[in-house]
Amino acid sequence: MSSACARGSPYLRTHAHVRWTGCGDVFPEPPPRAGFRISPLSWDELYAFVDAYTKDYGITQSSPREERFFRSSIPPWFAASAHRVTIGVELPIDHSITDEEELIREKRRVSEEALALHSHRSWILATDGGVDVPKSAGVGILLSSLNSSEIIEKASINCGTRPCSYRTESRALLLALERLIIPRIQHRHKTLLVVTDSQSLLAALNKGPLSQTDWTEDQIWQRLLTLTCAGWSVHLQFCYGHCGVHANELADQYATQTMETGQYTEHGIAPL
Image (cartoon, rainbow, N blue to C red; front, side, top):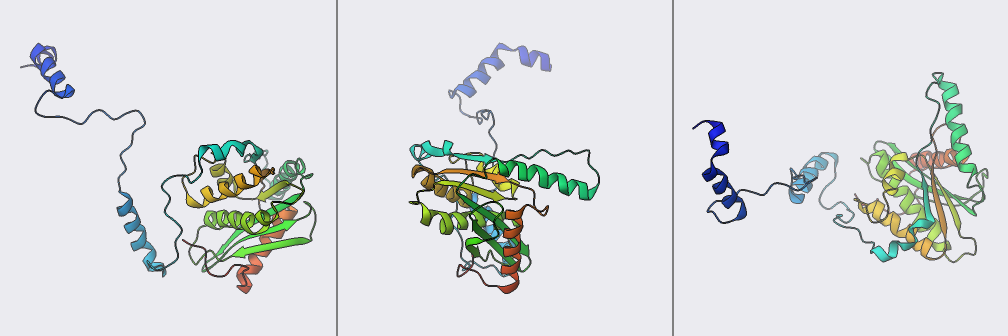
């Protein structure tokens, strides 16, 4: 029978309909819904693969690990104050600039202009992450103003021997909120500016508190919402790194110093 006849056969059309509606003996899988994607690995297979890979770097099953993330810990009603958190992710620059020194000046200019819009805030928190294998650090420093060199308080944590820079940046922000800001939650001044050179971290956080897919970012949003529920207003601003932005340079220097000396304010190593 020709393919044209097969397509036009009433019997075949009816038979196909019966099979799809569940009246026949054989049931093919239904067509996938829009956006559906079959995962190539189960969770167990994925974690087994990661465990086998990290074992080569001295990371064993007894190494401290953060909780495996499956769903947000933030109930929707707790996110009602999320509008009090604003995030500046993009800082457009003139891409026609080719001279390296001029490009650095341009990055500093746009960074300082973006930060100046929030310089009136009561607390300035600068965070940074550093990796110099096998050393690493996630740090946060609390300043009274954007141009102040006086550090009110600082915090640092060892992020292990094989973290990526994103990992140290995210742990730095979580630590800084937890150790430097949350203890001041009842302070009468409740406006905070967070300065970071991790654009990828802010892009992830910018998805909102109910759309996070990683434990650390979920915990960061937990701290942010704890602050906003207490009346705080928080702005997180990206700035370009290594271009002379004062607050960022201070945080970078502290991260470098911490890795060199091995003296962290937090005991132990951040969970994997």
